[in-house]
Image 1 (spheres, rainbow, N blue to C red):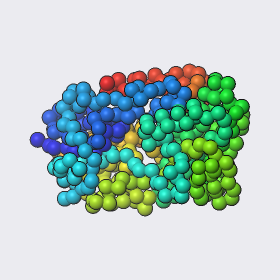
Image 2: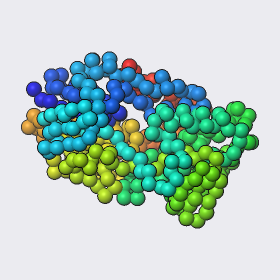
Image 3: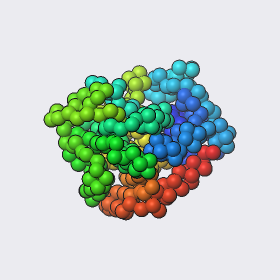
Image 4: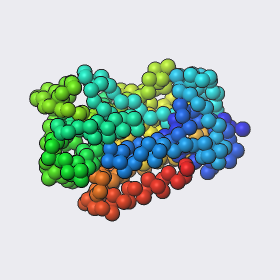
Length: 375
């Protein structure tokens, strides 16, 4: 009987479980993660306004693992050896015939003073901290920004920052407090959000201007402090800094034979197979894949990669051609706590729908539809 290990209980890891079980009812699946929970990070944007609470976003996975006949190994991965056949954790070792790495990415925290900023996609604790900090403020300047990994163009997560700044503006207006705050958006990119497409950049920047959100763009970040943001060209006051750094690979990669890109992610081909290794695949934020610079790090892309990785791993273990690939697609609704703007992009097409209340509710419906598989 084939023994498969999956590292990670996020979008890619759980999609890999479902795809494997769809194709093979008998193989042994062991999933390694610190907790048997899915944290639905796309909904973090709604926490500051009270549209979502902790219990809405954390989904216990015990029932899902039972249905899928998955053995859950509670622990954090510390290393990998024997060509990927042994996964080392802080709670023992796991051997396998095949491995899928879906352990997510790690935010680069090298900028001086970054401890003064909140990184929202680090999880629910961060989103609640943003909620509580804004609620306690009588006024002041809130700065929102993101940066990338210069050695890995795709390793950034900027989309949520547009949602946080627009959502905060909407929330403060509903509270009747917007006039007491200055909202600022900053990025070293001269055209932030360019991976969404040229039209989307214009629309996003235009929306900021319409809402009175000041922008500081195109200058490299130098440092943060408790009162300001400093770039190479200028500095500006900030009473609260909400910042998304670029991403790199997990620390445990250092204790492995995994080949890595210049930006620190696991190098893989368009079949999600890790270069130079047998029966080892990667999906989601952990991987560096061939494709255009705008290829996103988002849940939808992780799901597509995980499906390909699962199909190819089972094929390789069965001695069949492992030739499944994944489509490169960017698909998101940039939400503002009342309206949403939809953007989709493929290698052939770039589509954008203007903001509407319908798209806000479509995003909330998708959350329910997606999570019902795991409840």
